[in-house]
Image (tube, rainbow, N blue to C red; front, side, top):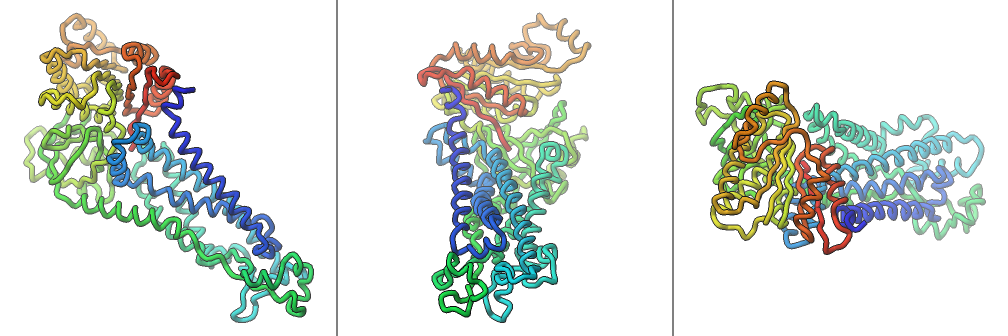
Amino acid sequence: MGNWVVNEGLSILVILVWLGINIFLFVYYYIVYLDERFYYTRVLVGDALSWARAPAACLNFNCMLILLPVCRNLLSFLRGSCQCCSRNITRQLDRNITFHKLVAYMIAFHTAIHIIAHLFNFERFMDAQLEQNETIAYVLSQIGNEDNSSYLNPIRTNETNPTFVAFTTIAGLSGVASTLALILIITSSMEVIRRSYFEVFWFTHHLFVIFFIGLVIHGVGEIVRGQTASSVLENKPNICATQYKDWGKVPDCPIPQFTGNPPMTWKWVIGPMVLYVFERLVRFWRSKQKVVITKVVTHPSKTLELQMKKKGFKMEVGQYVNLQCPSVSQLEWHPFTLTSAPEEDHFSVHIRIVGDWTQQLFEACGGEKKEFQEAWKLPKMAVDGPFGTASEDVFRYEVVMLVGAGIGVTPFASVLKSVWYRYFNNDTGLIPKKIYFYWLCRETNAFEWFADLLQSLETQMLERGNADFLSYRIYLTGWDEAQAAHFTVHHEEENDPITGLKQKTLYGRPNWENEFKTIAGNHPGARIGVFLCGPEVLAKSLSKQSINHSDADPRGVHFIFNKENF
């Protein structure tokens, strides 16, 4: 239990607090609408009133939160401000997208309850108008038929229907628009669509503007109404409800006066909306700053390397930027991890060619051409960032495990480059004492661009007599018969036939159980940072191993799992 608490305790606490606030708001506002002020409203619609208003309060709370996890500049600022705080606190910022999704699911849940409850409400409002007898529901529905008098039933005539009201009132139209926008946003965010049709995900997500506009003006129509405070004192529902036929005829029971609930949503969301607008202005300003491509390198593994310069650009290890190429698309931005080190005079990204946008960028940069490209022929680029990630915390641990899968090695290129520069400049005070590096790749070409860095680091460590500082394992997870024969023939050579490194490439996948056991035995009592940039399946495996191999004793070894999220 103790080892689970170390890795997940604070995250679970945050979720429990969030759920607790949702439950409190739901129960509190459910009870609020059981007050006598809404007695006559409940006569018309029953308990559906509370079932509509309670989730509305929860919607306000969650819509206040939904934008905060995607304010990247705010998160980067908080990450920098929290460097003096516990590592567990900064790790929560790396789970911003997970929390963003949870809040979105909660919004969808409460929206569904709110809509269903209001469907019942409008049917009952309509039924009250259609009443033929002199029932209290009919009498309440007729209040307000005279000019400039208050009313309770928002359906003012029996010659209409709920569908017509839904599409002709502010509350109805704004509710329909917000619901449609929410449905499109959530359905296009499914993993299969986001990975296969990123543009669909990207464009439909911007429907959040319509969602928030609809949300803010939804309450302007004041559909939900209740007795005024002064009317409750004059027409006491618990006494006058049974004397509804004599309302206005007896002094103790005058005709009740009603008013709508003033819109409250804007008070909840105005702060986050202003923050987000400011966030977008900062991004827009940065994206307009001039970026110069200084070098383009095409690697055999369908990987494009772009080296760029931008005035005032400052980065930390493991950070990422959003890139836009106007000649490819004026609207699309894509995140890429920086593979350069803070000590270098440029910043670089490695882009794997896997989709339409990356293919067009590859062609625009002359990736298919053999001859030298003039700098003025290269496309213009816009850069937004850099933004913080989990890998920034690498230097906060004395022992670290870096695990990259395929192109997921990019954040660790930045880390290892920075380590190399710090060793080269004799600045070894702020680096881990031991690094375990694992790289999993399906094809041999993928090793090419990163092997040079590992060779330089390997040589540097040997020259300084610190060969044990970096332990690395490179795994080839896919090969054919011809490659297998080649590996067998050259296996006895001093350097690896694939990477040229002294450490031989391993075939298959790591036995993580054994790896964690070995590292735990080598570093008793240490806090070991486990950093992954790779698929979710691997993340689940490493997270489980981190928990299983952490000691319950606070003085024992603890593996702290961190994953890159974009």
